[in-house]
Amino acid sequence: MALQAAAARSLQGRRIGVTRAETQLGEAHRLFTAQGAAVVDLPALVVTPPDDWGPLDDALEELDSFHWLVFSSANGVEAVQQRLQRLGTSLAARPRSLRIAAVGRRTAALLEELGAPADFVPPAFVAESLIEHFPVSGWGLRLLLPRVQSGGRSVLAEAFAKAGSRVVEVAAYETRCPESLPSAAVAALLHGELDAITFSSGKTVSHTARLLEAAFGEDWRRQLSGPAIISIGPQTSERCRAVLGRVDAEADPHDLAGLVSACVRALRDRPPASGRPG
Image (cartoon, rainbow, N blue to C red; front, side, top):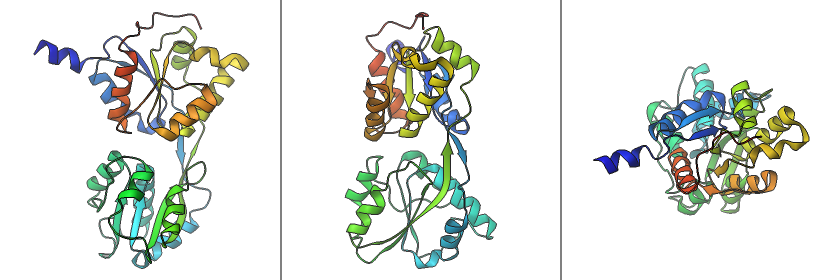
């Protein structure tokens, strides 16, 4: 029992910086604190409506003409549900012929909560897995892909188009950079108090770099010399290497639980941060 308790608190005494959207920090807090960590919020995304709702609204008006609705994020699910409710309907009340695919555990869980469980969730939480394991041939299918307005990957649309599908991509939301870092985060970075910083998307990496430069000037990378850099998946790792110069661990599976496990692995042999000078 003592060994189990220790394993369940494997981040005891650690301080972890989390760079998710401010409105999405709750689940990360729960998972990290369950492992004994203290969480320092470094919100790097603000989720906003797209510049123009028109393309999404037009597509939702003709949902019965699509065979599949493909979600790559929970933000897309929330946006589509809100716009459908404006039309007096919902995902749960979608046309019976319309099937739903979802990338990621959180995306699938939200659909379940809304009474519209996904018909297909790939075994790995990345776009490539959805394409590889898609349950039917794409030939002749009409697919609706709600996505982030800018900065997202078009790999799904390109792959389905090559398979003979007719793909409609529409902006369902946008993610923008906050104006500044919270003062508590600046202080934790300045005094070298973070053991790790986690990144959940390429945009969180780019935005964090921008926020750090605004807070610390051209020498901003110095603030990252101490904490481990933890990425949620391959594309985020690629951005970490390009923008931050390294990545110390990558989540597997590519979700929040995997991100916590990656932190545990990366910090296992590292001494706790003890206020390294920034």
